[in-house]
Length: 441
Image (tube, rainbow, N blue to C red; front, side):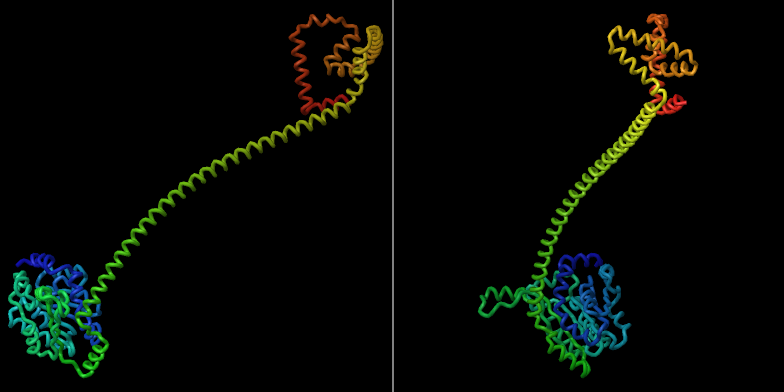
């Protein structure tokens, strides 16, 4: 028979690994006694299969070794990180010294072996076990009608069913001091007074498996310790164990349901928080953009304000310069000597015609006298040339005909006037002070 066929067969009909581990946990109170005698002791599982029992023993503190002739089963154990070898059970057990192993087990292998081989295996297990060590053999229970009639023969490698009393007797023959039968699995026994139909139904499905727990003779000290352990209820009745296991299973399912509900709440909360974080992130980005725009606008406004302050400062300096130039002009000598001429012109403009002519005549006489003196003539010319209107007055005082300038082209006069205006503006903005000092001289 191919190895992979039997692996698929067990996966189909034996049950899921977690279900198998739950069934095997009925032996844990008994194996705990041996573990108390031999901490970290070696536990050998013959026909280890997928390694469910090895996992339980390893979690209980034993050093484990699985033996199986099916290479695929051994590979399955290796995939779980379990120590297992593909070898013959007799050959492997023969390599161990006497009284060197704490526990030997074989689950559903007895029904596969010839009777003499089974007897020899039990004797070899007795040899290698330490005092107080255990041999556990589990096999289908032919007392169950379903097993005895048809389910036993589902496995084509099964030889024949082994009644519980026969296997118990083999344990005694192999030399074990204590041999107990532990009936396993199936529904609970109906209560007294139940209907015959319910009792028949129970007899068809009760205890489909049973186990032989054979213990090697222990020393007096070990026997005392085992007695104390039993008084501490390490060996509980199977029914109580099954009830507690069912209760634990129910609690585990409730915890899983609660965990699923919490997981959904967590996912919903994470989604809500993620959405809120995205909204806040967008809001922060908008505020950051608004802050940058406001900051840029403030910077531009400050720059314009600075430019305006600089321009105002320049205008203020120019106004101050013009004011000081005006003060210098009013305080200059040329301004003072032309004061009579300005007043005379005002009087002439406001006086009657006869008075105007008399004043003009007197002024002409004064001008004629003044122009004969070289110094006064130069000063008068310079003063009168500053103001175009006074120049016309000078012509009037000198008797120059009004039309004598008509021969001068108008564009030339306008150009000269523009030149004087430009020069006057330049003098007002900075160079009029030199003009005033030159006039003072």
